[in-house]
Every structure is written in structure tokens, then in C-alpha cells.
Length: 243
Length: 243
Image (cartoon, rainbow over all chains, first blue to last red; front, top):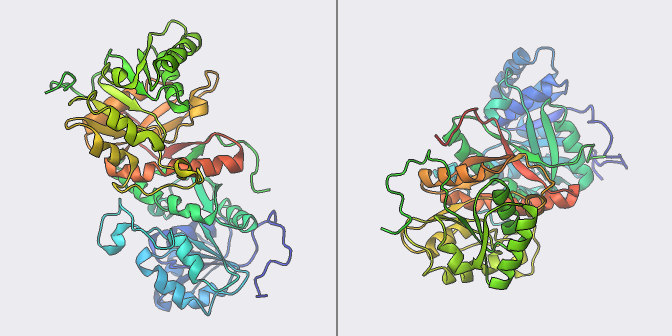
């Protein structure tokens, strides 16, 4: 059992005080997520391939989220710093990153995969997607992480530029897929610390193959409406579904 | 050029006074759509494989939408009655229906395909989908309709039971895919006659392969939340995008 194994922890517990590693935290989505979590009072660890770029992002973050506790490390070191690790790299680099994290990730950790297999990864259109052999990028991640690491898919529909704009308000949903309800709930609790985001339980990890397609759909809508669209699920009952 | 060809008609024109054929109008989605359109003052033609079942649906419709102008016909006859034809049959029956409509549909008509290729069509789960060779059920429809008929994909995310419940309010989007903006706009104008529905231009017809997946996604969410969920796109600018 690894360091991060949940020892009978209830999934209703508040997000842990441990730092939140963001692999690829210098990219647009990772940066935006880091910014929002830092402003929500969470400790963030920016991971990057280069320690120098991680350091630069940390400096920027300290400016946009004054007083926040942030750290910059190379990805593998960042991944060791907390129980819930976000993977926010382009699909093109997902497998390479997961290979590099093989010795860093440990049983009990949660990997939140935000990867979207758009055809842009192979010089195609971002309004089209690639078929992934395992069904989705998230399922590919689940195949590649060490045993005991749970993959949760999330954040595909939240616009990176909006997330990274400290002035922009959010009012949308995050669709969360995963096979362990308790782990989904931990990620939900964490993401709902960001004002304006509601976490919706979208189903099993295999449902990521649908949710990952929403990014190309929103990119198609963005092109037509000149905006940064998001998604809201209507008709959900009131109350906390994660209890 | 067929009877229904638009003779330079502007797509900003209000919905035509012609009747609206609904192929498969005795099914849950078709029935709900017929009900809402009839209550919005539109003439509706219920199509069915059986004239008798069409007649029964018409009798029900007259009860739930008093004073409405409705007709019940076998599908092929129904399809000849108006320029915008809705196809609301299960995926299992889509090809058969399109074959049967080959002599009925004419150049200039719009076929609004609402088909969702869930795995339920082959005794699988409704939270999973089938791969369609052409990319989507809508693209399959485009391949099968006579030349000059435009296929528009719509209505996949609107719950049939909600649509069919006269007491239920709607407050959600309809995502519309198609290759001709003017035809998408005509369908948008028509669907927006239903109170609580906003039509969103989701992109080219090929984008239907994403939008059709939203039904299995919502079924997955419905199972978890015990509800009839819908979709709302956030962040769209105000104003009429169909002008």
C-alpha cells in the first residue's frame, strides 16, 4: 500500500491539505487550473519538463494569485508531491508523460486526466478527434499508470483561456468520469473549490470517450459564436450528489 | 427542382405555414415533438408504419393539444406533406425507414434526423453507442436520402419523456448540425417555437458524430441522478445567431 492510499477515508472529507501537482502546468489548461486552485487557497505544484519553465510559471502565479503557496518542479518530482495529480498535457505528449511518470506515481494516488484526443495532435482539425485504441485518452492513461493508481477524467469542457483569465467568471459544469465513486467525489470536491464550477458525475471511465469529444464540439461552437463556450447539464436535482 | 425547393427564400423567414411531418411520430420522441409543435400552433402530421396507430396518436394529440391541426398518415404519405420532415425512429429502424421514404422525399426538402445509434439497438447498453460507418446516423441518412434533400441533425439531447409531458417545462438547448447554414436556421426557427428550447449551431453535419453521443452520456447521467437531463451551452453571446 503506497503513501497515498486512502486509509478508509470517507469521500465526503474536504479536499486534503496536501499540494496539488499539475503535470504540464505551464500549458494553457494547466496554468489556468493552477491559477484558479491557488486563488481558492490550495497549494499548487506546477510540473513541467523544464525546471526553469516551471519556475517562470510559479513567478507568474505568485503575481496573479498573491499570497498563494506554489512550487515549480520537473514533472516527475511534482507528481510525488500530492495525492491528486492533474495531467494537463496535449494528447500528443500524453503517452510520453505517462511513461515518464511510471516511477513517480504510486498506488493510492489519483490521476486526473484532462487529455483530449483532437486531430490537432496529428496536424488535423481541432474540431475532429482521433480514435484511441483503448476507447479514450483517459482509458489509455488507466492502462499506463502503475497498479493502484485511479484515473479520473475531467475538465475537458472548461475553456483554458477562460480558466487562465483572472478576470473571467465561470458558470458551468465539469463532467467527471471514473470507475471509483469515492475518487470521483474527491476530485469533485477539489474542483468545486473553484467558484462557478459544478462537478457532475458523468459515469464510468469508459464514458470519457464521449466527454472527450465535447472539446471538439465546443471548438466547433466557438468558431461559430466567437466565444469560449462551456457545458451545463440541465434538469439535475438540487442537493449534493457527492455525499 | 422539386416542389419544396427554396426559391431564394431568406433563412430569416418565419417557419413556413406548411404542415410538419414527423416520421415515427407515434414513438416517444416523435410524440413529444408533435405535442410541443402542436401546442405552439403548428400543423403536425404524425407518420407511422400503421395508419391505425397514426390515427390513435392523432386522437391523443387532439386531447393534449386542444384545437391543434393534426393529421395521421402512413410514413411515406406523411413525408410528402411538408418541407421540413422529422425522422424520429430508433436507430434499428433508420435505414429501413429511409429506404421506404426514397420515393416520398424530394429535392428541396429538409430531413431532420434525430436518430441516436446507441448500443441498445443491438441489445447492448443505452449508455454505449455503435460506430456508424459513415461517422454518424445523420451522415448515414444523408447518404440514403434522394439528391437535393438536406439532412440536418437535431434533438438528440432533449428528453423524450419530458417533451411528451405537457406539464413539464423546458429550459435547455438543441444542438443543430448540418452543412447548409440556411437550412439549419430554418430548423432552428421551427424548434425555437417550442418554449424553453434554444437552438445552437453546433457545426457541420459531421459534428453529429459527437452530438449523437450526448444521448448515451445523458442516459448515464440520468441513471446516476434519477432525472431527465438536458444540455445547455454556456458562454454564448446574446443576440440571434441565426440572422
